[in-house]
Length: 234
Image 1 (cartoon, helix red, strand yellow):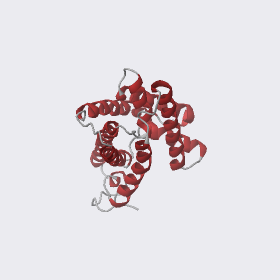
Image 2 (spheres, helix red, strand yellow):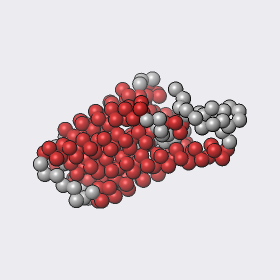
Image 3 (cartoon, helix red, strand yellow):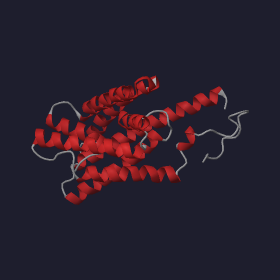
Image 4 (cartoon, helix red, strand yellow):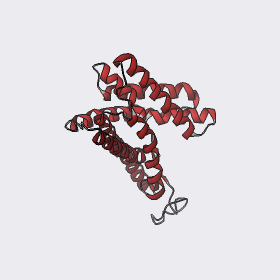
């Protein structure tokens, strides 16, 4: 691949990552307006936004900053400086969450079936956003980055560590909700739906849709002369 094509491919991968953040924020907003719980990574910020003046987006940025610092503490010298880009990504995601919540403010389902349907739709949209974010392999949000760091240090599978970190965040959100709000708000059955459905959607898309995963795979002829942009590698 020529330098120009390599730069173009890298730019497309980062644009796909940013698109993923935008789509994820819409999914999070849908789950917020469903009122029956949001995704595990957004549960703590949502509970805190209900209990105190700062917004969901502000707390989302704060949580990602904490998880970025945790990555540095876990990896130490093995932490790659490029991962500091997770910080501006967190600011972009937090701002996008606040914007999406505001844009969709007119969606206020009252009946439980409508709330459940909106929660399912939100989880599906978040799954699409996560797929767009992770498959170009340029960067991750700090939540996934922390799970990657722990998996790397402990030698455990990423999926196992991710499940444990998500469970810890949900438990923390439950405790905060009970203490600060006197009941369960922001973390309910919709949180469980999201925890299961998002991963399933990501796996399904990754299995049957070659793009954007093809962006991060080597093409034929990369070792020598640039060849045709064909096919997806196994």
